[in-house]
Length: 479
Image 1: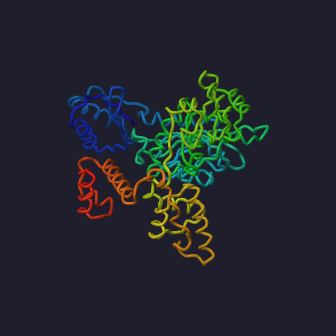
Image 2: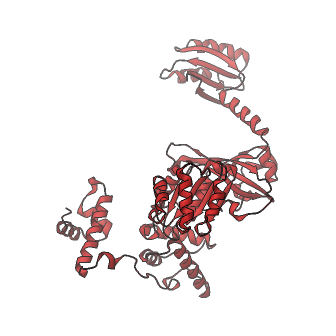
Image 3: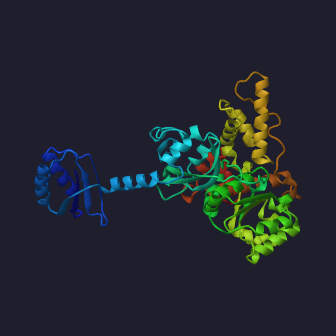
């Protein structure tokens, strides 16, 4: 039997209500508090008899604050469960939910049929078993924005997967806010032609570590908008990866209409073709700064006069490298990716992830190897780091395995990238060193909270004595 009790919000009233059921030796199996005004208590007592209920009802009415007691068919959570279960049973496409480890919690009948198992078997199985190529680890990370239109293949059939995270907190950047996700799968229609430029980009990992995390959060904010978006960064810094992620973070990915070009092939004719696409389409242009000037000019004119309907997402070496009118249109929604050399403390983490993606999950990185990687300036960023690690793995295999050693990574550290000749022209070596030292101290102080400004804290961060730090601060007038 299920009971609804309408009562006032009084301290201790719930304890008095439950004491009555205890006095009558009735086991309450479940319950909840709610109602439209938050003034109702719902209790489920399966073994309650009618004669017992009548006595309990009289006792409940004697509790100060209890206004009404009545029997009901279902408590609200049960009604929601049965309604949702009935609704999902009649949905023709697969719908399922997973926890934050990727284990399937629940799935409808269509999902079970797509997986090729009975509905009773689905719960408790791991999603990766059915979608082995899905970037599940990345999706289950703390960036809790929806992902739309992931192309996946299951049992020989092509689907588009929509991923809607279940967040327990309002802050989308907090890892603890992610409790799992709800997935829907829509079967893709067979395309009459296979045009590579019309295929969605491959899903990839963003690596939201160190300074890249701020870029990931900004991408999460800007990707669902309609305005044109620019991803700027050096070669190998992840522009193409963020370009593809912007597509999957946009609700327009549900429609699956996408065109992608490199800047070199983005001619005025391609601009005209793209302008004829629907509002629900997405245009991805990698390295827009390499596109011909007349193509960039045509694109700017169409955007400026509202004659370009699809969502535009582009990448470039920098905002300044883009045609000036385009630069003005893209400046408001631009994301600048940090170079790898600005994230030296995280290079060990990046290297570990790359080794794992290269298929070597057992490779370890000793401290001296990590230190050598951190000292290098990485002019080609992650592309160069990946190449070095591939070579290191090959060298390690030739010498019969073991952990990676410095000998497996020849040539590190290499040539420095700092523009000594540009800003040091006319200065002596001591003067140049003083400029570098003063700049480092200024930047580290700016990053520290004012309450933590002390020579000892600064010395700890810089790895020198606090006396030396105090002397330098006095020398440069920074104390």
